[in-house]
Every structure is written in C-alpha cells, then in structure tokens.
Amino acid sequence: MKKSKKTKKIKSQFAKVFLVRHGDVQNPKHIIYGYLPLPLSTRGRAEIKRTSLFLKKQNITAIFASPQKRTQESAKIISQIISRGKIKIKTETGLRESGFGRYTQGATPEMVKKKYAKLVLIYNRQPAKIKAGGEDLAKMAKRVLETIKKAVKKYPRQNLIFVSHRDPILAALLKISGRDFNDLHKVKAICDKGAVCEIWSVGKKLINKTYLA
Image 1 (cartoon, rainbow, N blue to C red):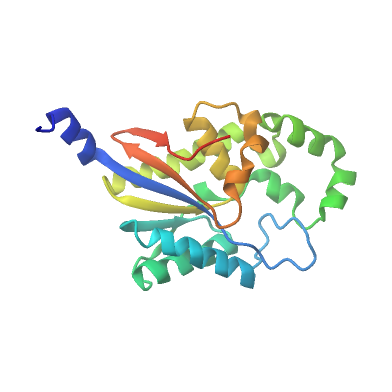
Image 2 (cartoon, rainbow, N blue to C red):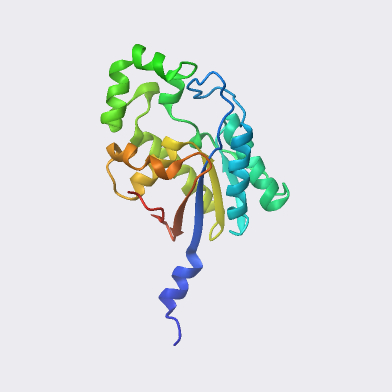
C-alpha cells in the first residue's frame, strides 16, 4: 500500500529533540548551587556517559547547553562520546537555571527553609506562583521553548540535544503538554540527574513524547 502525500510530508518534517538534565554535581557542602560554577562529580560524569550511549544512536546534528558549568561539562562529555568532540557546543542563555536557583544559591536547604520559609511553602504547594529572581514557571517555559524553536528552525528535520536543568525542562514539558505548572513536583521524578526527555518536532508543532505521571 502506497503512503499518502500527507504521510510523506509529515515524515519529512519530523525530528527529535532531546532535553538532557546535567549530571550530579560535586557539592561537598550540600548547598543549593544555583548559578555557582561547581563541576560534575565522578558520579555525575558516569551518569552523563550512560546517557551519551543512548544519544549516540540518535543521529544528532547539534548540541545546545545552558551557560552553567555543570551543563557545559555534561554537553562536552556527550559530544565526545557521540561525535569524538566534532559537534561543538552552542551556549544558549535561554536554557539557564531558574531564577529561584540564583535567589537561594550558596545556602543549605535548612538555611533556606528558615530564611525563606514562606517562599519555600509556596514553591512546594503552588510552584506556579513563585517569582523569586524575577521569573515564574510560565516565563521559564517560554524562554526554553523559544530556544528550542529557534534551533529547530535553523536545523530543520534534524535531531538536536539541549542540556539544561530540572525546573526549566519540566516547565517546558508541562507547557507543551497543556498541564498546570502547579504539577511541577508531581512529574519531577522523570527528570533525575542525567535524564533524557524527548520531544518530537512535527512541522511547527512540538509534541511531548515523555510520559508525565
């Protein structure tokens, strides 16, 4: 049976987008590291190497990463394993850590609970209302998705990798899935360190292919 022209057109416009969370960070003081330039731990490098073995089979054209040290290091490991370093890392500020991370960086979780008790309560119960650092989840999702769409336009029908952070990745997935941003903590299990979430780019539309509980 011959495929219809419509089916062939959809297939020609199809591409995969992989959102990768950075690996575990070397953090002996157990602080909230936010925008601090902490490197990957031995465990984190191993996590990203395992992730890279999956991505090696995905015919990747380009790799984008947030400016933070842990994402840059993760992206370089991925590039080395999937292309022997031939794919150069493109830094995108739209993939950066959340504003909340900058707001609380350097403090331990215990310190944050004491100093920002009300803020922590809101973040845990209604994360969509958090605007610490001048950014809520809606704005976060918007800048991540704008970064992805810009890259997809530049590399049409090509598979791409974006290395970012948990909340920005989850905010983007919730947005394109039509979910409430207050579901952030319900779905965070899918975005552990070194995790890969998959989006399909079909024409101008982004479709989430990662199961959200």
